[in-house]
Length: 467
Image 1: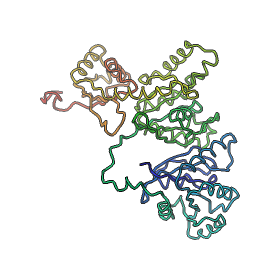
Image 2: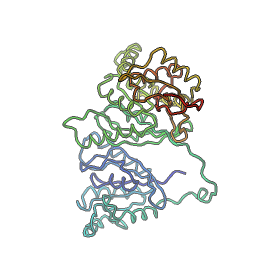
Image 3: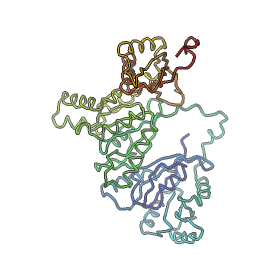
Image 4: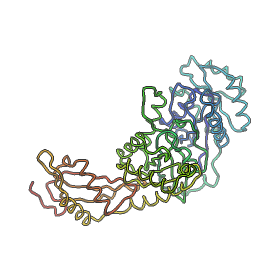
């Protein structure tokens, strides 16, 4: 059964993101003094109370900021209010009651759902009298808390629990354990600002969860959006556009980029989104480098090809731009290229076919005998270079099975037993990887070569070798 949901609603800068992070137990939302930092609707599961529930963090209503984003933020908040079972109306004790708080109170009453008035920033017992001012709003009970220091959180969770809908009777009385649920595949949609990342996720999931605007830098937090397709579970991570940090970058922009880089590290698969109209830029290369360094499976999605068609471009023009992207991002050559349009939806669903093929490739193993013959032939044809008067010697190689049950998309790993792992340079490493791919492409998957020094015993016969 789906979990009940709770939404945090309030004007800008009252501490919604800080309360969100406190309740779910990790720093997911960006917390900053600048009003209007949160724009998209963030989701997380709170397991600290008596019963788990989905928690929504929403953008501040009625604040300052880019006028073209105001309606988008309001729409995201309205959606959270409609879809939630309980509403947390968060106000700021230090700032006091404001006209926006009064307007929000009237708005939330119209929702006809349980509303808990939560007075934040009661950071000290001496501040508790400040909450009495909000009695004017006419809610049954006021809950004073300090999201920053954790005061009153237990009381808040108890009140939330009393207002959560009762679980379905059939499921509550069932003595059978729930069936095994496959771990979702975490897919980070990454790229520089304004290449269509949020539009892509909305098109895939057929929702408007991610705010889309022509204004670069609209997405700031990393937004996790769950989706199910053909029985498989996915979590799409909509990330902030990664731009070069300049001297005028705000701290919010820096935090956003850090979250995006962290999303690359925690994802099982990265979809590098590129704007075909502007081609590959230096920033695209940097992001591709981050994916390569993290050794992540990847897909290169070339977006906005519909604009080439509108401008009178031919199929040949699109192919030339794709080939140019391939050449500029040669170091991410294992990533398949998908040409699509997030705006029109053309070819977007092909992403799932590509993912399915990558999963099948990940299960393919190269036989030990075949692998050793292949690598010995590669070394004989192109011996390793000398390093400080020494040359790399390859004695034995095998492919590991890998913890496929814990990682939905496991890249292939090959263990090479050598005389000295330090003698393998990056150029020769890529050469050996290329020789393996010639036999087994492993499209979309990085190949991991793990080197181990030779032991006293031969890994095959068990007899001791002389050094």
